[in-house]
Image (cartoon, rainbow, N blue to C red; front, side):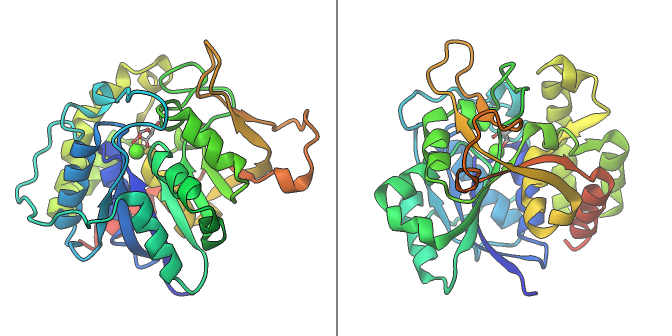
Length: 318
Ligand code: RIB
Ligand code: CA
C-alpha cells in the first residue's frame, strides 16, 4: 500500500512537534498540508512553531494554513504551564524559516485540499477541534471528503487538566461536540491510551545515537516537559516517563496494529459546572444507541515498545 494521505491540524506544543517529526519523515504518510490553531498557546505562537518545525525537518514544501484565533464560543485557556511560554519549553530554532502561511484560513485550506483528492482522506487532529468544526459548519459537503478524523483527546473517566476533561476537548468543548455530532468516522486516541505512550528517560537517552538536529530538538523540548508534566497531576508524577500524546495519535494512522480500541457512541458535555469537556463514551451501552450512532473508535491501549521502536527508526532517517 502507498503512503497514506493526511492533513494535520496542530497547536505546536511539545508533543505536537515530536509528532510532526515522525509524520513528515515516515514513508508511510504523505502530509498534504498542516493547519494551526490556538490551544497550547495562542495561534501566533503555534503557527510560528509549526512553520519553523517544518523547516527544521526539511519540509518547507508542506503548505501551512493558519487557523482560528480563539475557540468557537469561549476565551482560550492555554497550556503554557505545560509547554512553556514559547510552546516548546524554551527551545529556540537555530535557523528561522522565511516561509509564511498560505493566504487561505485553515478551514478553507482544508476544504480546498480535500476537494482536490480522488478519495476521502484522514484529518489528524492534534489540538482543539475549532478548525475542523469551522470546516464542517461552513462546508457540510466536506463530510463526504474526509475518511476519518483521528483525534488526540477524550477519556473514559479520567482527565488532564480536570478530573474528567482532556485538554483538547476542554479548550473548545463546543467544537468537539459539533464534530462528533456530525457522525463523521472519528478515532478518539484517548488519554487512557496515550498514557501508555510515554518515553522513558532511557528512551530519551537512546535518541543520542541519532546525531541530527531533530533528535537534539526532541531532547531539548522534553527537558522542560519532564518537569512541567510532573506537577500536572499525581498520575503523571508517578510515571516512568513522559506521555507523547500527539505522536501516539499519528502512529495510529500508520500502525493501527499497535492499538486496541472499541466502537462506541460518544458525546461531549459543554454545560456542566464540574464536567465541561467530559467525553461521554457509552462503553457499557447504557443508551442502547443504534449501530449507526456508534461512530467513535475509542482507542484504549497502545503497544508502547512497538510505538517507541517505530519512532526511533524514523528519527534515524534524519
Ligand atoms: O492532552 C494533551 C493534548 O493537549 C496534546 O495534543 C497536547 O499538545 C495538548 O494540545
Ligand atoms: Ca497538541
